[in-house]
Length: 355
Image (cartoon, rainbow, N blue to C red; front, side, top):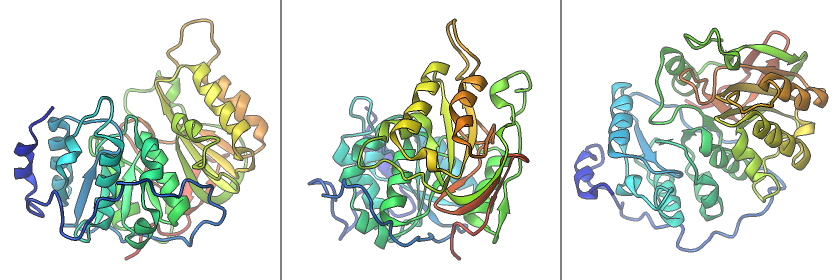
């Protein structure tokens, strides 16, 4: 367990602010809101990021090391932002970054803290789904700000959007590789937005012989609708719960890592059978990284995916640059986009942040 006294010194932005005056602990008792959303609140755009803004760092899933935290702080500071975190960011409780109430309180603290401009998850792992019914969604709605992460953070991105209307972002974590492509997408969506933004395509270097990075159409067609999605295994684990995302009339984006092909098959099948994914407008698939490493017998990953999604009779394309890879698009959940599976293009039709 890291020595918590040492990293209080690094909170230079806001001083020793492990507990702000007037900011209470939000998860002493479970908030009674784990019910299916019948009517989503009005859409809320968070304020855009500006140089010098304070980014609050949180760990709602798995634990991190001091070295990972320091690396995240340095990356963000090199990008021109300030950082702030509570000592609980380095907490450990088995395979979680602290107990459920501790992780929920940390996240709610960042939303309630008026001096924090945006919130970024340092890593994913596992754990976000455990705190969904501990969050105060009314408080989040009253204190909208950028919330970004991916992988396990999918549970929070979808649940916060559907319960508050706040646009949330599937994008880099604190420990991510900030390549030129990742930085450009981050900037065009969160920092210097335009009325419309067409994502450029970029294939990672040295992946020419890896079919997991191939870029191809599974079913032709065009679609327009709000974006929603994230990590396949997380979304499958939410199926049937009060937090099952609503895919109807949406453009759904999916990605995965290190799951054998039959498991990808199983989880896709579960989404089709247990949710309203059949009513989606289209499927934008990222890179399913290391999902072809199988023990025989098997079928190719490409064929397994096609067998399940092609009969949905909606536009589908695979290989967009997002997921557990170095090059990452920043995808705003809740923003209207146009998707052309035939040409393999994705375009935001409105800004995801406000001036």
